[in-house]
Image 1 (cartoon, rainbow over the protein chains, first blue to last red):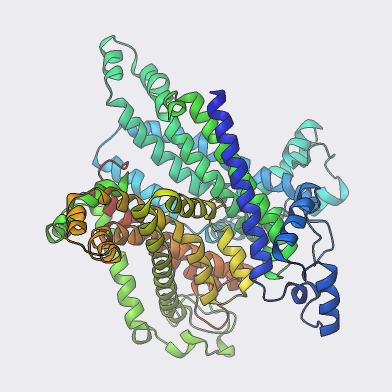
Image 2: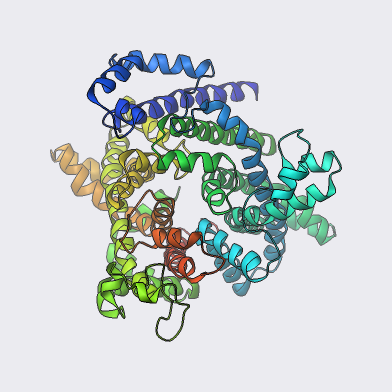
Length: 338
Length: 295
């Protein structure tokens, strides 16, 4: 296991190195003149020359790359052209808001998806086959931004049950701010016993989290069902049945345990999807997270922020894949032997 | 895995195609997908004839008829500039189809040659090519495309290029795995013994046999590509006004969705239905060609 883990970590490290190469090249190669982008549309030639020198853009690319890597390691991810805030600080500052959405969405998808997969596997047959397939394909075909707008129009516009945008109402954030512990509004309110704050934060997070959950829910339900069907056909399940073990025990303990690795892979995949999905959900719900930071940067060609968020997203993606692989190896000994 | 099982029966392509059609007809959800796709293609072909007001579909405004709710005069209502949304949605099928086709075609053009060489040659070159390929897959889906589109400057063409740049690795991997399994086939050895040059073998013999799985993969990807293009346009990284682009139209109605809900709803519905159709069809095709790949 240790040997396997060591090799896996090493490949992740190599990949990380490659990722920095791509982000670096993107920023240096695609905008025809980074210095001009840096100054803005009204740049004069003399200024461009000065900034080119100041940013070290006149040096050879390999030299610039080493400089870029050194700065990254020091935690200097550049400064936003639009807001002048440090990029890494800006990302870390907005991380809790985004994680709150992503984790809640994942929780919704897992808590509903896995039992739904198990239950529909029990009723295998044409109708249930078609039902789960169409349902999950609907989940993955739904444009996340459109689903967000629909839920807004229905639950805020028509019914008026839930707030349409932002993370907290003005009354809460200005008059009775939730004490800051972790940066997760729901948890902070819970920890400090701020019930009106909790209610407010909860009301605001429901719609965006549900929007984000649609895609992973479809994938997880479907994968759980498919691998349950595979497992339920195996000999050891038949043996368990002949021993007269209860159907409940067979399905939820014996079969599910062996069906979970496949579900886990899909969950990891959809987690990665949520990293980009949050760009859209945060735009629709005016949610002050990394996605919104990123969208604004993309539209303003704020390339230090673009590079920072791309790198951050890739690191997140890499970590998720690594975590899934490690969990997989723990659940399924065969993985380690490969 | 998929590729290997798909590649072997392609020795008799005509019976393969007929078998696919026969099985597809027995699969109601697959047929639903195929029907939606057909309607989409026909709509794209005849959009100017089908649209009640083709000029408005292309961008002509009518400020006297702004933000009318759906009704008999305008089935889908009108937008902020008084344009008939039904016409806009119908004409929007063209950029959607065109850009999706461009993305897949470009991705195939980049990915397939790389996969062919990597799979056929193997060795250090093949290894190096696949490392680079995998690197492109180490970004969260769509993020790389969003960044490239933003840096190139927002147009529909740039969005399509950006998507292709982040999409080709899938085709490279697929082609490589098919090529690797074909490399050991006796008919390739035979060609070599007859002194056929390597590029000719690659194109005449390997590529021809790899074509079916690549085409199927392209269909399966169609839904995802449609969604991806809509997503880029929605963020403002794709088509620009007055192009009748679905993602752009949803963005146009975003801020007023609580009151004029129809402006964002109908174009988004179009993206959803087309993506659903392509995904259902792709799903059915995958099942028919590789029964083991989940239900």
